[in-house]
Length: 391
Image (cartoon, rainbow, N blue to C red; front, side):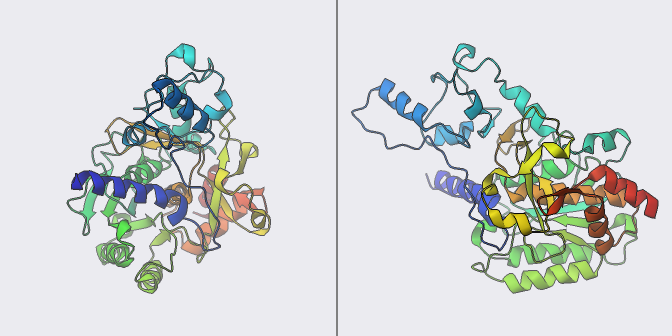
């Protein structure tokens, strides 16, 4: 029972990281992934009444992942969702979700097709892959929660795995997702990059573990030629003043950057200053005109005046932490998904020109971006073209 409670707690922390731990310090109120099926069960209710209550609670951004449903003692496999097409396009689910029979689902709704669409990073990334611009020869790192090492998306990309104070903790939701966005064979922006992964216990609310990991990355790079160094680190976490040792973490980021390591994190105390966008399903993901502000912040008017670098976070499919061939589709993403995306694009740039400096990279990303909402949507193909000209 103790182990079940611990696992449940860690999963809740992981979900919170996606939608709250990675927000900017401007205090945007994000919408957490919640199980909208979470209703008070009345012992006198009939099975039919319970199912009816569940049905009424399925709405946009509901979490229909199988493990969440089982944890809540719910199921959707007996529901009639045939008239809920628009709603189902904006839910979270995984490859283990048990759907109703076809006659109880909208004819146009195909969960597997949606997951395949969501694997595509968009914005011309796969065109770059077809030109062999895949991050080949570039070392990248992630500092995040414990990883499912054997997932098909990235199992051959992990060069080294280091766990800090969480050696006995099983895989968590967050790690496989960010790893697949960065180096995944189908989901990834830089699928040929080599991944160094540091697992740390983010649920303890202490930056000391990330600081330790980043310090080890700095040490790893010392006295190594450029092609053997870790060039970019993805950390899907912002600056939370209520957590311990934040000032130490900031100092370590500064030290890393001074040593030539680019640290992509989710706070706006840095020149990256990125935010999220999403492309609606069944729209052309390579066309930036089909993107809009991410779902969790589309009502925040202050975004109109911010010079953000926008990266895709909504309607993405990622590796799941439950099974080595499982995936999750996230209609509503968080800034957690933006950090590995941006780190991946930077890795592609390093493949073309390994001598790029951090300020140059962000200058070129903004110069080549597609104007949007006071800032610009990242344009990987134009960025690579610019980098090629500077080589």
